[in-house]
Image (tube, rainbow, N blue to C red):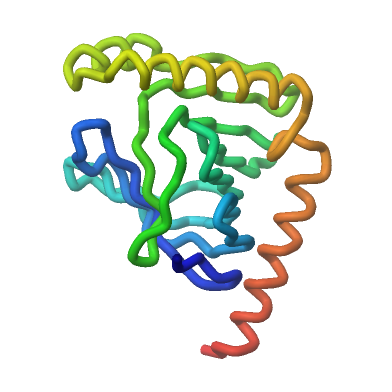
Length: 184
């Protein structure tokens, strides 16, 4: 099985349950790539929506994907602190130089003070009916939402106090290495 390699650039593909593409992030630098965890970083990367609209991310972000948990976490580094956008999703797969997952609508936004808000419950209920999410998926997603919230409360994984510093330093190191090997 191929794994992403530290320093390489990959894409991130988000799909919906019906198999349709939802969103693509064009360039994310791999900071860690194992069979269970991929940590990446991007900054001002092009994002393509399913309807063709495009936009650039505003701030540097550290992205956390796990092959066994039904969520992924985007850590957005803003001037007033780190904001976390957590997608309840399928575990990731790595295929054709891309991280791929199914976005299941429910999101958790975590603020710098570690308070959080559950988002898009109405969208989840609508898509659950429209796309026919099986009951087993519904149970898995709700169980993983509980796990995600416990990570937030316990400051585990990407919410740990030193996570951002460690991976931001690794990102800067990799950018410096690339700049040295690819002078303009």
